[in-house]
Length: 180
Image (cartoon, rainbow, N blue to C red; front, top):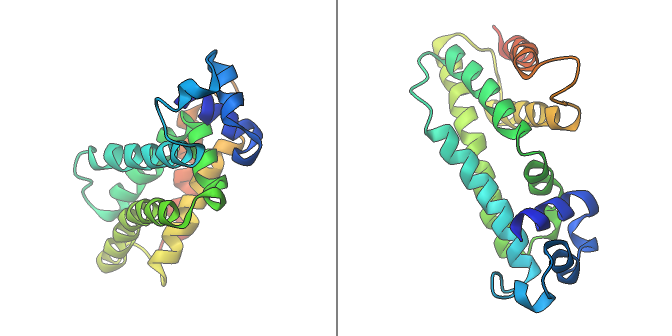
């Protein structure tokens, strides 16, 4: 049910997808869905929260980063690699924020802020080390994340460039964007 809902929300938009449509996709009556979720809003929130919690947990499971430059490269490659395998979840997490009720929005926004802060701290450390020239680390973190997330809009596994090549190109752009 969750996979079908995620796919449908990404393809058609949250507002256009009914619980009946999700039920039809998984081959059950609409009423059966309510055994798993109280309503469509909760389903959307749960999908978005799961994506953000998985992202944070995966980042936190990485080994210590070393210097800020190494940490930034790790973050760049991690973000691209993690998200390219989850295009629907990424799309829904960014495009459907507007459909969250205020309390749910606050939770998701808090999780996003937690992730952005991890990158911000790497940038601040790089400034302190004299490795990066970033005057606004918070804004730079959000800009870099937006750039890295954008890979999902065009990358295809069978495309001209491999994922490793894309990571290398983006690392080069990120490195130059923050260099002294």
